[in-house]
Length: 479
Ligand SMILES: Cc1ncc(COP(=O)(O)O)c(C=O)c1O
Image (cartoon, rainbow, N blue to C red; front, side, top):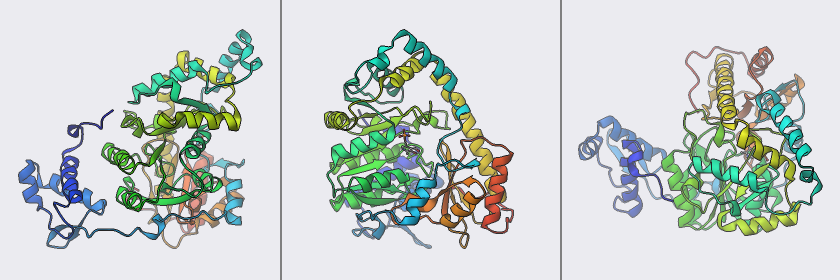
């Protein structure tokens, strides 16, 4: 499959792409002056503003730098990696982090810590009826021995749905798992050996860091800007030959909520191919997008991408069924699945297959997205209203969670976590989202459990713990 045609990108991105190619090819060497906005505007038949947008995009990528009153220049070659982007042995979790991790997700009065919703958000009653009908008709769903890589009717449904969002999967490459976590673990085990370096976005979902730890892998944390993973930094790590694999939550990242632009997705896929490293994509939130159109996974750009997902965020958090499309690694993944858990229980797979076939999954997804968007907006508005000035709130492209940067001098996320728990409020402390405890000035809040007086009060309580709740005069900046 091919990358999207150039013309599908906004003009400024097309101009940036040409300039980027000249910089990467050395036609515009380090230190060279970039064409002025006027020249660019004239050459490409666009406004000065559009030309400026193109240069600003390259500036964000650290490819050019602005010099006051002089214009833009090609940035010096960055051949050294920032310290945090070097491979690091993941030390065992410190005691406090271990304790906090074991507490996140345990019952509390106000659930702002998880990344899913209350049962009412999911069609669990309908699923239950389907399950009873299925087992009545076919007791072998429980009575038979489980073997193989998954229930064929479920695979068929996954393949059919993936086709609609641009991915050509084959049933033979699919392995049905016990959730996306197992999918990621199988993919990692198939493509790495202990000691290998794996790039992850920073911040990233803390279970991925735990997984790297338990598999004896080294993390290479690549900073995420407001556009997602810093691809210039990733390229440096790739060039340094430090990586065996990259894990990306390119659609609706947990915790930042960012979806990579189509252009950055193409660049990421191209980089992984050029340096021959495995690209593992976690697309668990892809179906929870707030934009009208579902974002395409990286896998839509290349069948070399290993695509992982599950039904935990869309159908039923407790059903524990996921899948991995392993492409050229599919037999390695299948044999690891066999030797670790033999197979995934057929009964829930059959129920999901039936639901996808007959149960109005698309109508359910539309409702789910609408509800999540509404709840998220309300929670974000309340944060902007109540949290101290200087708070920065993410503006997620879908999903359940908000990533909040607290103003300088506030409580650390660790302290806030503990104080909030004493009031029965669960939050996810930011420091758990990076191996070295960075992001202790951030918290992740879940909007999935509805918007009601208790949640609003919890937001006010958190704001109170952070200091005097000054009204924010202008809206918090976007992440
Ligand atoms: C990015 C991401 N991947 C995977 C998972 C876990 O998926 P599952 O529950 O299907 O194992 C989560 C859950 O929060 C997640 O946020």
